[in-house]
Image 1 (cartoon, rainbow, N blue to C red):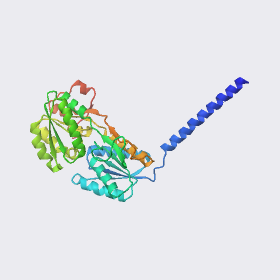
Image 2 (cartoon, one colour):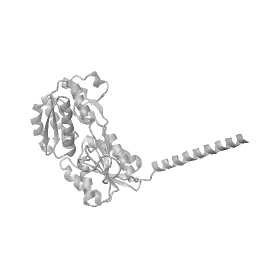
Image 3 (spheres, rainbow, N blue to C red):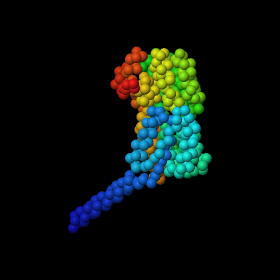
Image 4 (cartoon, one colour):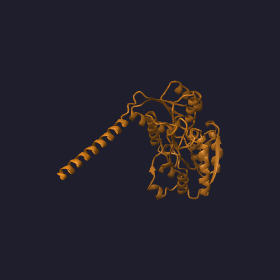
Length: 335
């Protein structure tokens, strides 16, 4: 009789466990299948260039998978700051459930529009290099504002190490940056530190607007043995200007991500901007479904992968060491 009772007790316990797991599974399925068809998101991209285009594509991938409708506005290269301010104001006035802003200036425009309208619209930023310095969050761990998102911290240490591997005797490195871009100022400080640690003299040249890039590059290039890029929107958007000058001078340019290497840079410790955009989109979905942007920690994505363009290396007579050949992704220049 005792044996029968033990068997019955075991069967009952097993049934209770199965029912508990079934309940959990049903809840998880419910969470995964939230009806988002009535939600509408605005995506504000600072300007059209490949790095930001990839971010936006990643965001759209995530929203498409969740069945969330969205509209996209992109500032023009010549008037991106003014465009983004205007678009952001329209987005808040039109009552979108959430705004996703791609790049620091777009995020600052979106957040400012929310504040000025005393609106409750959450802002989720993408590819903002220093959200604290930009005033978008109080801290990465606790934003404490109705604003959170992803930071694209480029692997500056990895970039300097890559440059030293490809040009072991390099003594001077140049960088162009926009003086009004908070992300560029923050990255420049880190680059200065890493160059100092590597025994490289960094020469920087600031610009106020894109029209100054050609003359700034012409002044900088004769002083250096290579150029490197930050995630500076003005500089990246007009990269062909100084790529041509650097090519004529026979010095390499190092990109901050893979698309720049495809366009003619020698190599990069590159960020995956599509993946960054997808992560941003997933964060936005969780906020739409109830998470509080003010307490949702902002995420810094630091992973990078090496990219090299053998065609450019051959043209510049730079040997690619086996340490890079064995680990880097090879791409060819766009025709």
